[in-house]
Length: 278
Ligand SMILES: C[S@@+](CC[C@H](N)C(=O)[O-])C[C@H]1O[C@@H](n2cnc3c(N)ncnc32)[C@H](O)[C@@H]1O
Image (cartoon, rainbow, N blue to C red; front, top):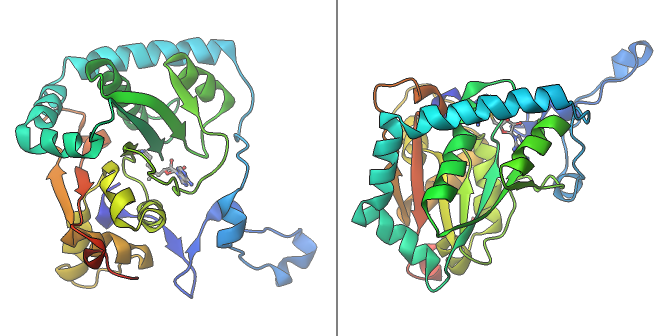
């Protein structure tokens, strides 16, 4: 989702409200019904239970076939050519090399992929992850989390070499070593959480991020009249002073839906004075 189309909802105090966590009381006591959003503490270590635990072999093999066909489609697309040449472009490649440092590879953490069984955009996004792993030896293990993933989808992800994270980290993975975060079209809140937990020179430098364009957040914030910014864009905007952003080129084919308004982002503050206290 592009910055402008962020569907995150907020309550009257501008707090994020996740519809899944709205407490719905029985009909009798509806009068007392109140929306309850998660506190930070509740969110932190919340165990993940897939919404649909069933592992259905027929659905599994259908999904495997769909992914195989998306892989072929994506690999032979103009978009993928552009994508590879952008990564191999010296300016972008230098950023990946800087993040890697002396490490041979960086693991990938994929948040917010969406339902790979129900929609083509998440399938194409997953295929991009798989193709990156096949093309670049510096891509290490792949871990995936989205609260919507079903048992069947989890099995399929595992058969493509990904492991599914069992706890909802709410995007708060610390980059203690070089890490590639793949977060296509996520809500501002997830980028905010990721930045917040890594808000120091060393961890910021350990991150490469594929996600919504931060430049777009800034643009909407400063230029678009009547734009109501998410309260979670503060850190996104603050990171702009030490971030390097490269827009992912989508081209005129039908992969636009999956990759529009996406960017590669790298954070390279010179020292702690460049990382503002928020
Ligand atoms: C706007 S959708 C994007 C889906 C897909 N990537 C696309 O481009 O169509 C945002 C996704 O973030 C997921 N999400 C919400 N909270 C999350 C969390 N704590 N960790 C990982 N993913 C989360 C949602 O379930 C949803 O699938």
